Length: 338
Image 1: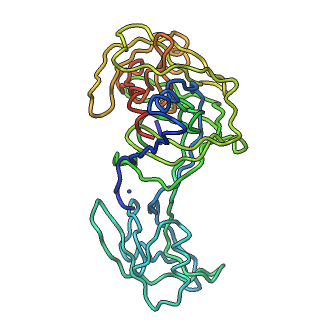
Image 2: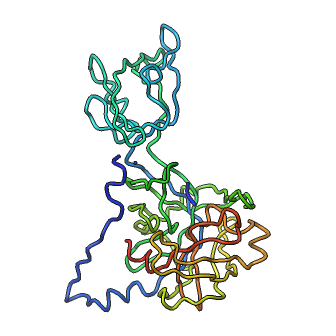
Image 3: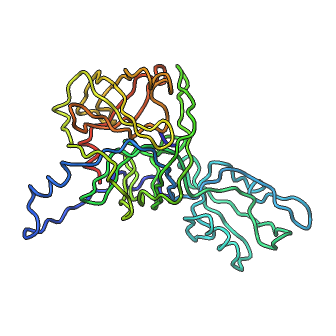
């Protein structure tokens, strides 16, 4: 469970499929996604956002002492820098580039709690570099650990998480690409009633799963790297939500290193039309999983759910007051998103 320019201008990207009558029929196109490779392995996400967010205010050492132009003019942590002197800001490097221009004064447009505001500011001249600085700490990317749900090798795609990456106010974050890496899990913060647990992992920078392309209500999707090896993955048939039964099922997840393991669960409830994509309520039945993690923890979101040998969905959320229970999204919803 991972860890706003233009606050979700597009909530879902709709893909228009062009089918060539000579090379494929609608039946063949559908059959291409009937068989998928089962995920369950952890991934490290480095996603570029389309916003530059102020995460802190700092001082600049100048020849006259310490100054923070941002603090002086009223900029606060949590503000989104939209533009400087009318020039759009999309990345952190845009700020220094604009400040290096020979403007006599600078006007910064920010968004705060959905409201557009403007501040006049006089940058400080940093003593060590002689560059103009605002005295802000900013970020234009987000990093975290999650789980890949499936690999669609035929279409060179992957899907993960089963839910969107959001900001601290639970707004879906629009992304501008990013890289998804292999991840080694080295520790688990066990979940207890009232406090969700967490998988802790390190990114394998030399092991690229693919390029992130879409963050939407059903998860993070992307294009599979040409070098990605599926030979050790299980090929599985997709299952329709109408075929899901109350009762035994299993999930595949990684709790140590890069070892994918199968864990027993039960499907407690189904809700085909749930507007929040909470199509299943699941209960962890596996004593080993409960002993290691307490149940569902952050970083397990995206873990594939399998019933009767078919991929039916993915783990998405945990019940805060009962980490052995959580929600899952139907695989039908995930497959229709990218």
